[in-house]
Length: 514
Ligand code: CA
Image 1 (cartoon, helix red, strand yellow):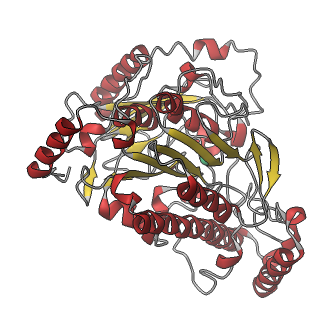
Image 2 (cartoon, rainbow, N blue to C red):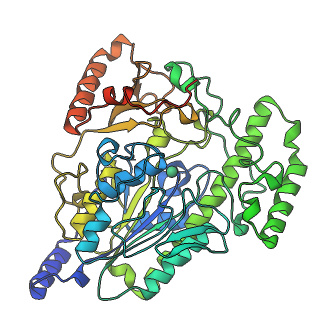
């Protein structure tokens, strides 16, 4: 870990201020701005070393703050990750095991605690938890996944449709909130973009970004799934087989998901862009690897165009914070609900415990506390967000929270007894061909158990970062395997995991698993 020093002089000044103020009033606590996107893979953020794009505004947060290099989710899918974040608990305890569950908003969440502690709380954008948001003074959230064009927002007063591109509209709601919020309270604002979730619909401004470029392909685009259990080969998330020409790839252009929602001007621009592109490349005449390469280019460019809109809007929000002076007392966080396959293993989508979907971006800026340019390599997880934000708000962290506060890293204090491994459990049985599985990852190794077929995989991430060959049956790894098996059992016990046995007996039928 690169050292991140908190200047001693500032510590003294901060301590003196606290004494003078006598009691810390609500207004003295920092504002919290949580900028969040959907399916934004760290390998498409330049601060994380992207080889395929640049994200100057997200990078700005990293340059002025702290970047967590080993940040992971607990269950790599939209609704469960959001529940992990809100509750600080693993899925089996917060009840949000998959996207079909309805979130129990009566349980303890960090927004409720911050609201009770005197914060003015708001959420705009993607919520995806079915039940109404709780713990928010204001909320405007998409029904379900939401739409890219002219999105609808659920509000306490009913549903409203707003004309525009969803990333711009949601950022606009956040900016409007920042300008009109009550100033006698600190705020906690969650600004949650739909982008760059499937289907990848770029906004008007970015239709032509990357048009004349070839985006580099990942090394594992043509993975043959040898060297692992039967699970990976049974996937239903292949760019080759499962990416749909119409609504995923705009062939024909009117096949796009939001076509019926677009107004005449949006339709005209969309059609002129994709009709011309389809005519020039004639994908209907391609087959085999040539077709996969074409699909990858169409997919990755549209995905990155959605990312560009997220990055641009983060820039607008950061600019406003600077102009208004709010930046000085506002913690800004950037994260996304899980990682994503950008062609690695021939895939799109997420769910697996493999690295690309296990990882989450996590960057924070807090002037005066976080030393600019800091890096953390310890293993952190999305269950850690809630206790961190509760501590920042000077509130008490409830005992039921399973995550650990990241505050020591932010303050450059020793993080004693930090975890050596993380626990992972994916439950959404069979969708995209991914079976339920659980596992443990430490700094170097990963053990995965596909318990319906009782198949195991063990990866040496130092020697095999792309996870192409399981070492589970390799006698040279016998000791490593034994230790990981013990660690997995320890984590299960520590986190009160009783599944998979109870899930195997669940009345919820698995979706067809090939
Ligand atoms: Ca997601």
